[in-house]
Amino acid sequence: MEESELELLLKYPLLACHTQDGAKHYVGKILFGNHDIDLHVVEENVRENPTFKLKTIYGGSIDDALSKITAPKITEFVDKIVTTLENEPDRKPPQNLTKAYRRILQEYSEFTGFHLTIKKCQISSDLSKIHVTTVDEGCREHGLDIAVDWNETAIFIPLGLNLPEQVTNSFPTNFPYLTEIYSKFIAAIEDLQPFFDVMDDLDRSCCVLDPEVPTRRDCYRRIWLDQNLSVMVIVNLANVKSRPELKFLGPERVVQPWFEKLGDKLEDWDEKKNFVQELLNILGLETFPVKPRQDRVTLMDAGECSICFSLRLNDKLPEIICENKCCENHYHVECLYEWLTSINSKRMFNQLHGQCPNCEKKIACPIPDLV
Amino acid sequence: MQRQRIARELEKLASAPPTGISVAPRDDKLNFLEAQMIGPDNTPYKNGVFKVQLQISEKYPFSPPIVKFLTKVYHPNIDDNGRVCMDLTKLPPKGCWRPTVGLEGVLIAVRMLLESPNADDPLMVDIADEYNNTYSEFVKKAQMYTEKYAC
Image (cartoon, rainbow over all chains, first blue to last red; front, side, top):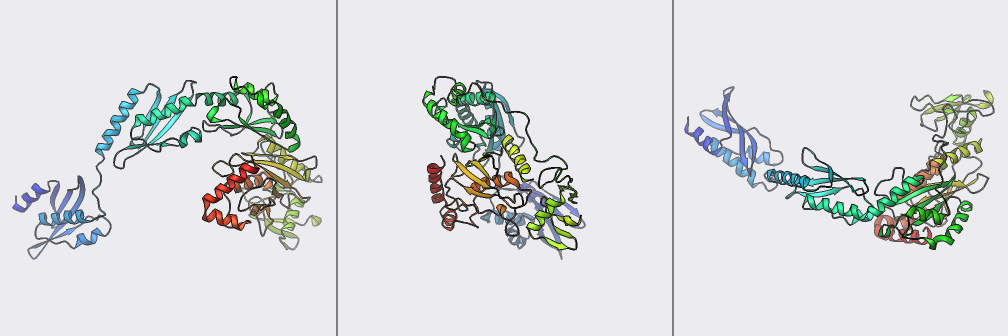
């Protein structure tokens, strides 16, 4: 073994040398900070004088500086590369996260073993997300998503808590320990038990219009009372059993009598009694009305005119169908004609040219008198 | 023809009302509708109930309904008389009303306007300036109006 090779082996043991197409290649890893980084150098012999060329590209302005390095020996050449890399202010050696990984895994295993209230617990394969499910006194499941931030020391960040805004606002944005975030979450859920009870009770006993799919975050329910009449019930989180804020929604003439009726009973609210029962009492109801099931969920039935929403107009069916395959809305000649004239569409011969009111693609309409 | 269409629209709105919106005719004649809107969350209008009137002309659905806020609102696109500046309720070529938009479309758009004001095309220039430059001041005043007039 040549002396220079031995020197290289001692100083940079992870570099291997091989000959390819008459040139010597040094390929492998060098230590930078506490991390191994790639290195590839080619040695060319020009008139007995070896010259070295760096093949690895590190990116950024550093590559320019590195390409100017010259040295008589390979060891010195590599030395210079390492110094240049170290002197570059923006280039910090890549972080070694082994410690952080070990810490989070250890904490995670202790955490799952310690808390008996955990129903399910998962950690993503890259250790960046944790999902915990717990069950409360009322057999309700609550999920908690936690993001793990690796910068410096691992910290735990709660993601999109499904709890009322007032509670989440007072939640710290990050926690140093996994146990701490979970305990805080459990404590919040325990505090909210009366609130969840009331909301569940409401959802069971009345017809809720809003929110469409109630979540644990929502402190209000819009309850169906009659066609065109509903009442917003906003529960007071600070004192769940107290009289909620009530707002009627509907035309004045319908709301007025309810409002007057309510005025007499407002003071009768008893915080010690059942919330839903008290709500029925002040609204003067025995039970909450059930919304009749004959809902119209679509505005139009198939084949009806998209302007007048009916099938027959003066005994005629909608004759014009938009040619756009994704639209294919139907129109009566009279309806489409009236729309196109009201926006001054172009007239050519005996047709009006304009856009389909639904998809805005080209549509033509004959002039009705000529049909 | 008009009655049939409005009746259909109201029927659908009553059985499946859009989030935070309720609407009903003021009387048997269908030319005035009364709507109520709950101020969207994450806005200074939160928890307020805003009365909105839709006036339906004889030419509906060929001409758009005229939208007017009956509740006072502090908003760049709503003036002191409750008039609302919105492309959707203007006829082309100025606006983009089409018969297929309908009452539900207009009502949802009005509530969207509460959620995200369009300060680049304001009706109330002062409020729009405030909205763009001193947002916290705008929020404070809008909240004050909401508490005073809409709660």
